[in-house]
Length: 103
Picture 1: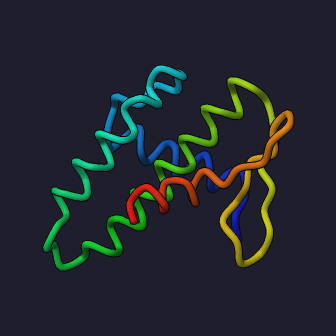
Picture 2: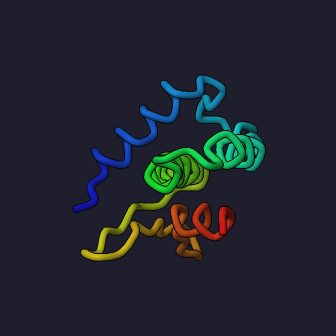
């Protein structure tokens, strides 16, 4: 089950793996090149799908946390679904957006 603590752990995992993600709005511009690099790096790897899933969740959690810190909002957790971020005037699924990007 998703929790705010789990989101925070995924963010910490990403920051430990790739120290360039500093929590700033500017760091969001690093997401696309990072994902492209990871996809290329993992191509043909025996655990490619599992590792890309982990990267997707970490990057999605990071994306959501940066947005939440910048504009406000709260995470919403529904069983069986990726978490959504409800902010002023909008609701998004950051993990869903990253998944879509990698398709």
